[in-house]
Image (cartoon, rainbow, N blue to C red; front, side):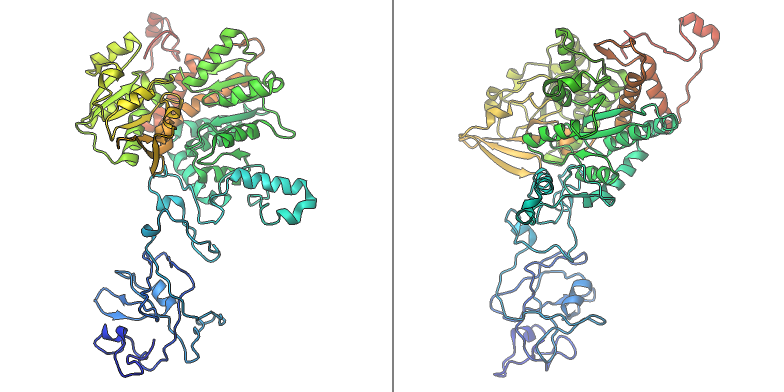
Length: 629
């Protein structure tokens, strides 16, 4: 530090802070050296503010205040690793008589430029939205996106790398191009950096392979909440019932899906995987799977082109051709059917878990163009009652709270569709005190809603008054531009159905409307008169795009999918024709039984007389196929 007195005998501004006395022993007679830290913003695990430099003071200083209120000046390294400053202040580095920084103990001297530079330094939140200067990430702690964005769907979906804005697909293709065109190595030297895991495996495309450790922890947490699927893995892995199966998968790529993927591999299958939704991928989980050696092609925030490219990569690979499909939405099935008919004809079976995908399969079956057997998991009891009802009952609230922070008590909400998803949404919202009404086309579902106390209306009747609109029908154009034009300002619009066609989002991309990004997966759409609506996840599945779903419920659905794949792959010729089938009732019951031990539930066993009286076997199935649970 400089002397407390300036050359003209006047007190310096810093000395006046302590009434003219040195703030730290040994600082009174040091020469004044104008120096400034190289970095514009200093961030450390123990220091959560930015140090600022006032233009009028050429000598940056920092005042560190401890719990007793005493102040002292510390060298940079001490200030960064010592007590936490209560408020941002300026900083002066400790210097020796030569005017250079003394080397830390045990380390060699590092030369630094001490030319004075004036720069106004701002806090991180003041800089938000501005492009930060490029800096080397070497020696700097990586900060994930989830630490700066609390609405990132529980996903560590970023890093501190300067290449974050570069699409993983672009980097992957640059690297591939550089490998093929070796003559252009010098031209591609700066760009062609292919990602590899710790074993040199590179047949994947994820956001950042370095996030694998975080993803592995997420998967381990999910495993604890997926007892049924883990029990199935333990029972089936010894027999390897999927040995020889080559599964092309397209599902939400989350920690729960990772448990399913690793279960299929434990059962003997080889897999290639992509995501069925551009916003639901957990980047760290995709990295963990790639680190484990699985060909994964997915990252959060894919473009539409990226989405289809990832599907192609999961289908096409040299020396690998799929013979089974696990799909969610029917997109992978559609691509293979349209673009790779020769490969599609060699598929042994398709397992589909969504309303949209099942609808596509039934259309192919009706037209006589479905050439492989398919299993409709969506309409199985374990999927309908647990994934669609109980999962949505919890996850819809999580998604809405994370994205909007609104209070639902007294709010007017309309839910479009009263199927299992709609039932779960209505139940949850009413529990928080919302005034819920329902739109329906099916008189049976409408009667169910009425008997539960929900008013059944048309959307046109209530569109001007409602505060929240939730679609859950699986249809298209349920909410049209005309509806959107008549909504009141501040109305929240989101979708809980699988397809992103329920809300006519494309009609909002017009010159007269302005889109304003609020936070991750939240957009304001502004009308010329000043009205604005809040659109979540651009009309895509809001619970998986903006939050997460309960692992236990996903365990039930995933176990159902795994059993369906095992059944189709091992079925003797002729058992399943080129049609769409429901999961056998016995399998539904088996999936349920795998999860009962988690609740310490004990089933009552039928006596022989009781079994004869009911006309069923003592081990089931206990209900006929036409029974409605």
